[in-house]
Image 1 (cartoon, rainbow, N blue to C red):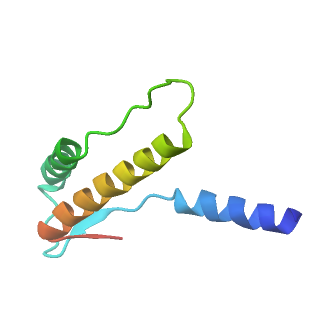
Image 2 (image 1 turned 180 degrees about the vertical axis):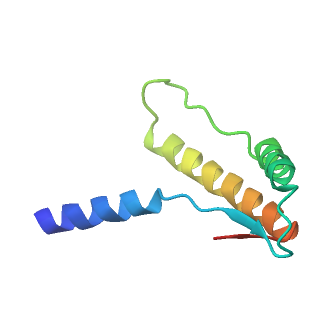
Amino acid sequence: MNKLIYIILFALLTSCATGNYTNRSGDNSNLSFDTRFCKSLARSLHPGYICKNPLMCTMEETNIVINDLTQYHAVFQNCMHSKNYDYQ
């Protein structure tokens, strides 16, 4: 049982590692602008769900929050990909 907990903990910690976006042309001069643009686009389409109880979400609300976060991230990645950036 302890090994399973350590494996799950390791997987969660390694998934938090951050990478960088790089342009396929090698010119990253607009990276900051494009990142802000894509974040604002994603946030305008999926502004985020706030649970009714600020201390705890119900199970249904948790699913809504996770779904909204994944859709936000998908829109952001799609926008960056459309601007010729790859995540490394």
